Image 1 (cartoon, rainbow over the protein chains, first blue to last red):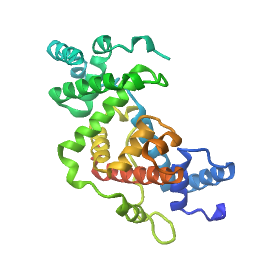
Image 2: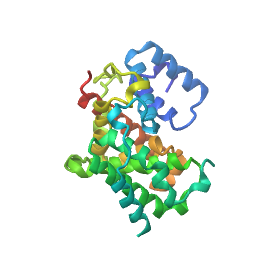
Image 3: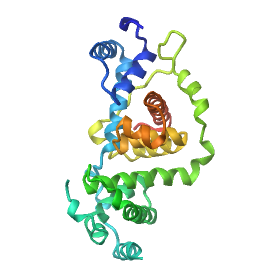
Image 4: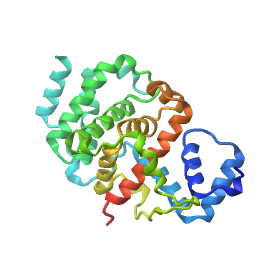
Length: 85
Length: 188
């Protein structure tokens, strides 16, 4: 298929694939061009990247104060005991 | 290899227990369950510690295990009956597009700041609930790729699939997860 014929369905598939392997340069250029022109594909791109960022994040900063507590002493001892069992 | 010398269960609880607990509590919202998941994480890590290759830090490795446990928890809790099979799932992705390939179900705007997204309980709740609703193999592929950061080649070997199958499964997983979050997350 010619690049200029890429529709939203093709672009969504190609963009997802680009997150898993490096696509040829011309594919990347036409996908990006389509995404710049199409607000729905642009949203789709941003949202998939957000899902990746959230999936990989271990960030717990900014939680409410009541989340600042850690394991209770009892839980800590119980877990340590289970690891030695 | 960060902290590799500390790959020792005896010091895990003191070093990582609190941060894993807070992460689980933020996702689950129940102290008792969060403690259980942390305990399961440490036990699973201890069983698998010989396979820890040091490609990631010890902390990242433990977080990866905890995230699997959180997904398992949501799946166990109440979403088993919604599991779909993979064969039917191509129809599920096709429905997003019209015959000419344009969006039929258009992605809506998400009113969320990526920097703050992980702090938004409602969003992350929808994220984990939706992940737990997906067909098991699609969810597995997604978690291997996006949570664990495995390469296509590694996933291909673990799941015994071809590379092109892997890309298709990841596409379907992302489509389903994105749409499910959009449908179930109540934006504030």
